[in-house]
Image 1 (cartoon, rainbow, N blue to C red):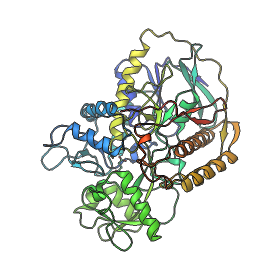
Image 2: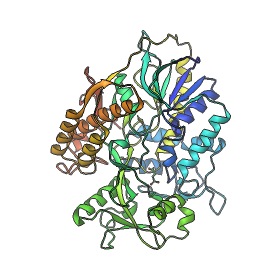
Image 3: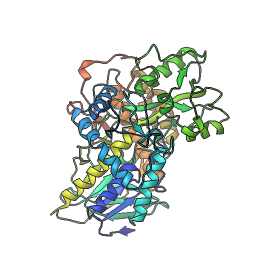
Image 4: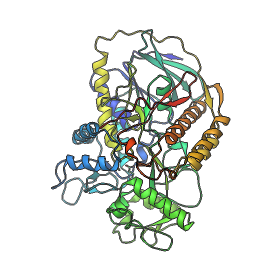
Length: 527
Ligand code: SIN
């Protein structure tokens, strides 16, 4: 298949960043096609619960500066301060545009938007929709807007590689359809908005689509990735026995509105850990739960929300998940455990979504802008997707003015190292979760190395498994090289922060054989 619809921009991914970019680009007069490997709403966006962290300006005492300070504090010294200030300042405008596109946020009793609070926030500043169904509402609004605008949408097509012209600039994208038939889309700009890589782990809040395809594609195109070791574990997913795959999230907003964590003896354990107790930044809470589980030998801790009024109305998604598991959160504490949740790092971009390759852009969870540092502040991700999606659309429009367009060069099926997904997930879960050490990381690396076999990648599963394989190798390499604990990266053999790593992001590139190498000579992110 060769599908040259005279597109200016191919957007890969149909979550918050991708659809925002596509809609903005169309409004700027660009011809856009959105490509997604599954159904339009099958990415991570629709699973986001808590909300969008934003200072609209109508809450006395809260300011964008306070939001910036909370983001920097949560980020463990690794945020890019300029990125934080710039992205958060654009938040109110981005949310206003989203509302103009039809997203309906929950109103409070006084007619203003309702606000909740999550870990690490010093104020109630998280706007939400459908109680705890914010991502679903954001996705609904954007998909409706894209449908109304008749944006071309190619579902069931997985992106394989960006194609280049003779000058090395992007000229298109190779894809595989659901039956593995190869195809080519021609365009001078490709925006990656493919989300994260929670599927590296056996237990995650992420859907099955979160396999890191965009990061792997960018690495193969010669773009660096950074901060990959900072895989954020959400402290509270519903625990209903040992299980793998996507686990039901219990939003931090439940704690924001008064629930507390208890160990199996019914004792609160966060009060001794951090001044914000149960509302400490997410990395702190997830690590404290992990230590509590190790100390008590229990499989889960408990989230006691019995004192909250109207739980079922305020948190309908969590309530339904609890009821499906036979738990009544109104009458009994909810069993919870941490699970892989968010990739704080990703493809290195500037603050407009541009990468180092002309014509290749990235926005949303796939990208590393410097906003999140070593640990993302809760509910900053939908905001980043909105802001960077818009900025990337404007960057593409600017860059295409006067650009010479050439067709893509020859296309072939890539031969990539592929390890079985189960092997990768078991090794990563055992060695690269909360609490890592040199021996475990090296052992996991050896296991994946031994299991990775080069083969022609001819279908979606192959693309995904190749992406997971290279990302596992990359995460293990950077996690092994960062000999300190910081944010989401917790080393049991190096339990303290080490100032030599302050403001130093780990950068990964691929060598000539396609293997990830850590570039310690090229640290980015100095704030
Ligand atoms: C949550 O609702 O707890 C998750 C929100 C987020 O990951 O930002």
